[in-house]
Length: 254
Image (cartoon, rainbow, N blue to C red; front, top):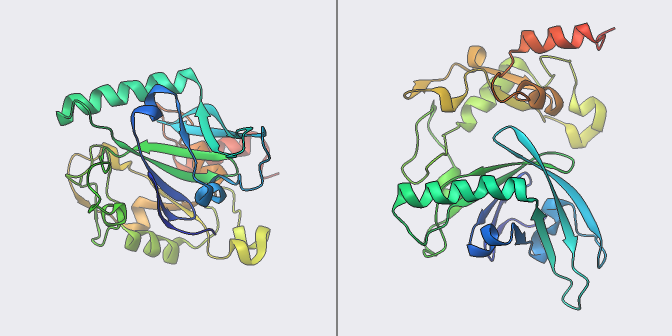
């Protein structure tokens, strides 16, 4: 894991989470500079001048092609670019953000979450940090209470997730995938020890109000592949049982 903290317009929270404070260039040129200090987050520290590394960005359950490239120059700047299809989606977000926030020249922030390999999920969190150095993004994502589904005023689309619920779910269900039985420690040794993803069987965005989450009934532990497949269809989030049936039909368990 590389260094965490604030680097220019980026904030590295941990080894799978980064926040980018967007600006005009982000939307206008469908891309962003990637500071030298955070290249490790995108596994691009060893790129050579002119070399590109493909990325997959998942936005609202749809996949978009992007890439990191090392520009051929004495500065050896690293930049991330995505294509016009994702730019169109992002432009819509900016328009909606300004309309709802009343900030004619404001910009939201975007969170990158590393899923696996070169795949990252991106989510706008509606927080304009550009003009306020006193705001620390770390303070906006650390959740201490056990109530989930409550929207924080500082965000437009961010939903609270309780780390305590996650820990409790792992204690109850363990670190084996509840669909395919994959275990990260068995596959990766010490690197994979205690690692598993936790899935909400009731998506937080679908909740009308705050509710008390039951880690045994409302949370399940999944490997990265099964977690992505459960969310693969935008109009239909699969259940554990439904995904098991699909895998059995294709002789995965044979």
